[in-house]
Length: 107
Image (cartoon, rainbow, N blue to C red; front, side, top):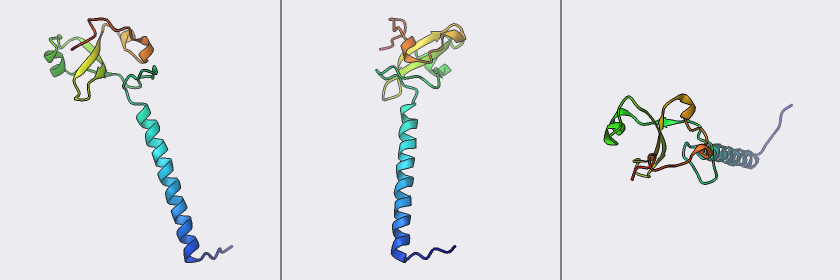
């Protein structure tokens, strides 16, 4: 079965496939962007916990042996909200688990 298409029809089909590809890629990246590990006011889930490195702990006067999860960073990347992790059950995986106290907030 051979389909004979004119040059114009081939161009239209390729253009439609291109548009579908762009729409699919856009939807994929928007969904991925929505899953970023930041807390939004809507109670979104944190997919990947992020922890302070030793240099950040030193800057915040925290012992380097202490495990500290970053909850929120400023646009410049500075730690705005963190939580000391005493055991693995303390790791925040959903923003509804948060109850900020003065010990968690860094100005």
